[in-house]
Image (tube, rainbow, N blue to C red; front, side, top):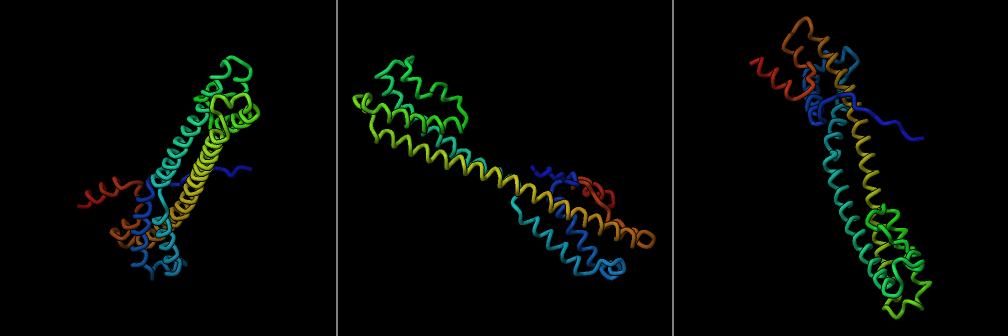
Length: 229
């Protein structure tokens, strides 16, 4: 069964979440004596800090997307090399047979430019198989095992590039999911710290109470800081 997609609990960037979490940790450390009365001790605060640093160390989606784009470009280049190798065979086949003949159609290279990756790979392997069965008839066109080896090698390189691309796509999905999971844990802990902090200072210190106010974005924080000034 496919795992259900995880949704973020917060609607601001991870960088903002990290900064607000670190701010709340700093304030909670200052107020750790009061926090301890709520069962929130320094060890739990250190665990919160460690998870924040873990989030900061995770690759963001721009990095992951960049890696995916690099291997995708390599796959496109491998596909073009395979098409070129196939065309080299088909030019020779066309010299021997009409492109409307059954012998030509057996190669199945029509609309090669519209094929999916899987179809192109199958096409390359089919060209090798069909050409080998007709080598005696096509030898006079210069078609031989060396020519077919170029197709076979191009197939192998293309298949590897396809697999690498799929691995990168899967890796990106996993990393994004892990990042969301960790971000949600941090957000829950951040909310908990802020609720405790506000409860501690609600009646006694307005400035410290404001330290635990949650902002949805950096813009809100800047407006609030400007208002205080």
